[in-house]
Amino acid sequence: MICNKQQLADIHGVSERTLTEWANAGMPAIALGGVGRGYSNQYDTAATIEWRLQRAISGYQVESAKERRDRLEGDRIELMLAKEAGLLVAVEEVEPLWTTAILSAKSDLMEGIYRLKSELDAAYGVDIDVALLEDHVNQTLSKLADRPPLPTESASDEFEADLVDTEEAGAE
Image (cartoon, rainbow, N blue to C red):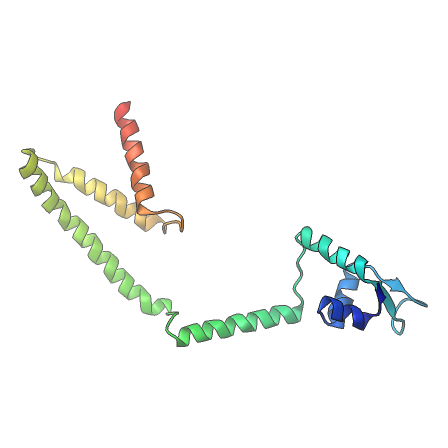
C-alpha cells in the first residue's frame, strides 16, 4: 500500500519527526515532484516495514534525543520513588554498618579458631597447630577482601571447588 507521511506515522505508531529521522537513516521513500522542503513523499508500507525489520534483525537501535531524555527522566523518577519508599539507601548510611558487621564476623572467626582447636584436640587426642587454622581463616578473609562474589557464585560452589583442589593435591 502506498501512503503519505501522516498515514505511515499512524501505521508505525510513531511521530512524523521520527519518520524524518528514519528517512535520513535510509528508510525507503517514493519522491514526488522533487526533493527537499516543500515536496511530499509517499511510502510503500511493505518496504518501510521490511526496512525496520532488517534494522531490528541487525541489532540497530537508535534512541532519539527526546526518547533518551524521557527514559532518563523516567529513571530519575523511579529512583526518587524508590528512595522515598526506603528501597534505596545512600552508601554513606550503609558503609559504617557493613564495616562493623564485617569486623565483628572477622573477630568471631578468629576467636572460633581457638574453640575449634580445643574441640579437635579433645575429640581426636591431637595437638593441632593453631597457626594452620589461622592461615586458612586468613586466606578466606583475603579472598573476601579482594573481590565481591559473582552473582552466580554460591558459597557451596566455592567450597566444592576448594574440596576438589584439596583432593587432587592429596592424590599427587
